[in-house]
Image (spheres, rainbow, N blue to C red):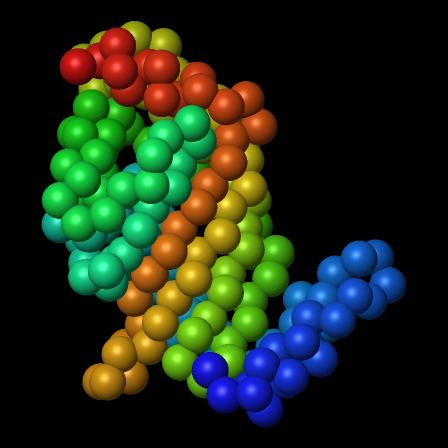
Length: 166
């Protein structure tokens, strides 16, 4: 990222009234392809479609979920497959809080509530949290998630159930 772009990023994210950066209040067509990738990820998770889920990630993507080590490459693919194969996810709430695009990088912040139900049977748990994506555009103009970090309001509930399901 060049220095001018970095200054533009800083200007757009300077604190404003309410503690939010200015980008939270701006729109623009540059956000649409980023939000389309986010929508694709959400659909894939809810559909339990591992292949579609993994397609939203860049080859060098890294995923950090609550109480876990950073996962990349084969570990990311295995964790995603395991999770989506063992659990049914239903999005109960999804709120984009901020989106910013500067050159070939984008940032997406969101809050969520989802229902997680073991596919083998059992009770659903409802979990909420906040998260962010960092996306990078590719040479063909498409966007992919390069980093995803999420935090559950009650850390560990989902992960504990994931481990018990195996």
